Image 1: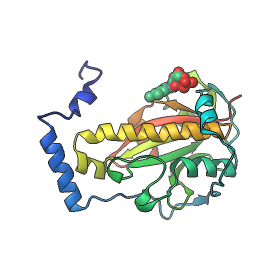
Image 2 (image 1 turned 120 degrees about the horizontal axis):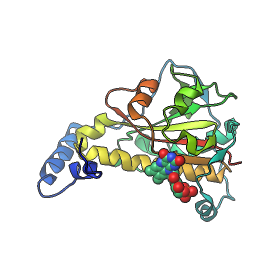
Image 3 (image 1 turned 180 degrees about the horizontal axis):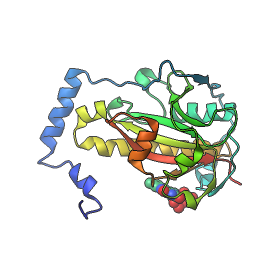
Length: 242
Ligand SMILES: Cc1cc2nc3c(=O)[nH]c(=O)nc-3n(C[C@H](O)[C@H](O)[C@H](O)COP(=O)(O)O)c2cc1C
């Protein structure tokens, strides 16, 4: 194990030595037609979400000023309307080839968003995947005990409560083929875009998303039943500040 805390950045650096392979890989992937693909869980139970309604009176300036990582959160699940707005505005599909509010490296749409319902409510406790195209949640065959998920958060003592746990996962297949080592950096950058949007839209709904970088990556991946080419990138707990 390296002691250089920035090793990831060094391994993924673009310079005179690494640029030719990066450029060739990108061109080859484009010629071969590396395509975006939106993850779906066909055959799983699904809950449709209300489509977001246009909100004319929400000022971006106030939302930016108001975003805060609150550490005392209510445990009541956001209403279907609030969750539909939160997910649809943050990560819904609003353009061709899976485009949405989150910029995406190469347009490959490598982010997958999971939501863990930590508390009882209209959404059954346990793990759900946000089906972007259908604007629905698909239920996963995964642990339903919230303690299992909270135990995977390194800093679960740094906050109280919360109704939902976001888990942002990067699908490494297409992005890895296209960008080689640089893909790891791109996945993290893209996850940051998505998390910031979740934070801001949460604020606009009088909710809070508290970002959590300290998670037990591999155990979380196993609990979600992810593929070997997936990586857990970021988590966040969501609830109404109290
Ligand atoms: C990449 C990243 C990782 C973070 N990880 C954690 C975490 O594991 N636990 C936690 O309690 N807060 C975490 N935070 C939240 C920060 O502690 C918080 O953003 C910071 O204290 C500033 O407060 P503010 O968000 O209210 O401006 C993380 C924030 C970022 C950007």
